Length: 397
Ligand SMILES: [Zn+2]
Image (tube, rainbow, N blue to C red; front, top):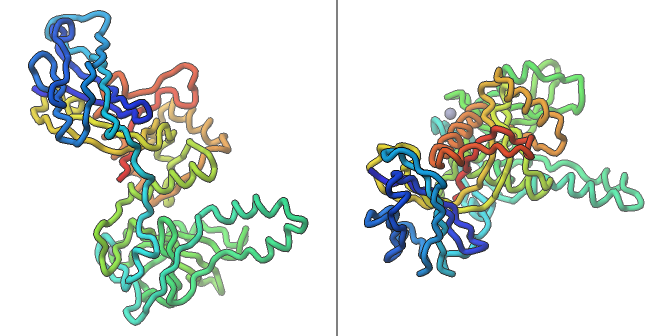
């Protein structure tokens, strides 16, 4: 049976903080050592760090044994502090952008990722340009309010519009002019469109649209209503819903773009609290607190399944999050948190098609199971905003 192992790299102090689960007898007596980059409990190897390119310094591990050991066949956690060599301690570079304009400059076509339905006119040839940050408008607003005549500047600040034959590249979407889209390749999401109040707010509205062939969400369109008909003015195709031709080496997933959104929002709004909400249903799927945006975990899957025979070691670069799965929103505690987070103006709402919200929550819940049971929930009395929240990760690439 594999000895369950979970650790986090603390690169700033060059330490790997680990938890092992060993039987009570071993916890009381066995020596814990590192030999040739392998962690041993007595003579049993737990992890060969060379498998994942982690190098330990030749410093004896610092072991914290449990205060009391219970019955002999019960397994107990032991905390171990391991020292990394200098070369293992370097922080990784910042996350890259996915599919920026320079990478997609040879762009020809775009298909629905789910059913490969072609979306754009074959006759089009595109000029690719990066769009500024999603938050450019509010950043400029902050800046011009100190000018003597801010209204003059505001009048010149028009939203960026789609242009024919231009592929305008945002961080998570492509902005395309309707002239370049095959007619009927996309269809407005009918339930959402029926809820739009055209007599309120701006003349045009952003509404989600789906692939006409398979019905999967694929982006959102800017629509205006004329004579009871709605007309598409611009289309944002979500990068995680489409594939592009010629295809690139890596096809980023939804989680990759979710990471970009978290980082961007954290940078611009200095917020660490996020409400994950479905675009179709407006349902809140999770409350998420970004705890550490760049950390590395090294683990085997022993805590996930104690009868596990597979000793494979994994190393992943992750964001550590505290989260509350809100899929059971009839729970009193969930309701209480939803209410208090809803009032909190510093919490950012991140909206995605419902299917992607569900996928995200499932993925984060799975990561919690890799942790020792004592580390799976955060229950500090001083942190009422995150009481009973679970600890999990979002993978970074
Ligand atoms: Zn499709």
